[in-house]
Length: 394
Image (cartoon, rainbow, N blue to C red):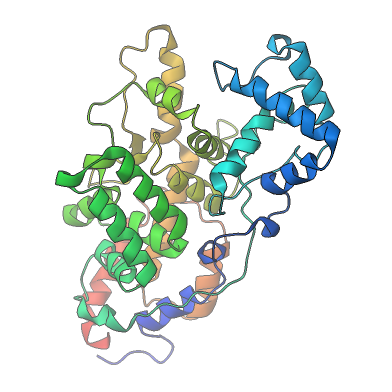
């Protein structure tokens, strides 16, 4: 079959895409690349005797709290209030961390130590602990062995192959694959390896594996996608109450940070479903929860609905609170649209319909795309049909 002059082979299109600026694939951020790292801020604070004393006193206040939830000012002891007041003008106020930074646990410990200072008075509560600095390091990928797959292979298999062809992605994927295998399953070890994968693997690989598009009728593809996070080991063996999951999450600085990040960046601001931030931040926050107590997953192999592995049965007078938490995953329009847009975007990587591939890829990379999860399936079916018809071109 002869290829029209204005179309490029799919492998060339993929290479063009992966050479575009993608910040999440850069090496682990150093403290200096963050605008105000909490580690740097504490270092500055410790150089000032007044700030140092106030910080350490506030640390003793937070360690004695029975709950990690923000406190009302009236319930905070006077000496803790005084310590918080002394930190109002320090560099600790407004400090952030990065989910890919070294010493992330230390950074988050500092963040939540000073959190009561931010919750007293006029300071904004709904601020994510994470800052995601934009970087401009291009990505390269070896696609020469992609030809070993059949042209009509499902896209989840193709993205799995792309990960296998990258040494780092393959090593990290094998790491959690071994830790989460049935006979070796130790849930906490499995969760740790999953976090390591989604923190350290380049974002195009990680998102391609988890958010690969499948036709609703292709159960094999859908099951491969649902099994990406090894749910038989990573998820609780018995379905807990959703509020119990949250209760286990909040005392852990990392889990609490990831949940806060998700609630901020995937939050519909009104009844029309207007989202608080852009879709890329929502997806990054969603992937950040994988490997924590609040790990979500696709609920079936036939659709793209996601949910926590929990129930609200037996919640008593906390039923409404429990359902609100559960629905923030299962009925979240911002999350649903972000997942649908990314899957549509991934389906376009293997499409040959673009008149100007470079421009189209960049437009899809940075432009907003509002889709219902079902809207991209027709395009996906057309793409796979063209791939079967054009197998001689690959």
